[in-house]
Amino acid sequence: LASLPTPAASTPAPTNTSGLRRRWRHQQLLMNHLWKRWVEEYLVTLTSRGKWNKIGRQP
Image (cartoon, rainbow, N blue to C red; front, side, top):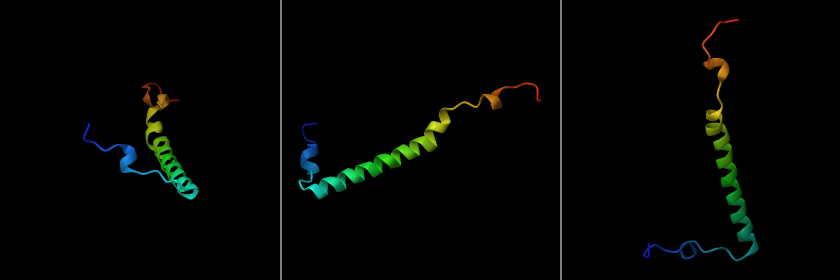
């Protein structure tokens, strides 16, 4: 672990305002993309479909 570079040394933070805004916007786009995929692909797998899982008489 001592030989790994520190995050500050590997990715310097922008010091100007436009650089900070661009970086913030990029982070927002990544988070929105992750959230959208999580909702569409994973969240739907958590819902149970009780109507289709029960074996019984057909109406």
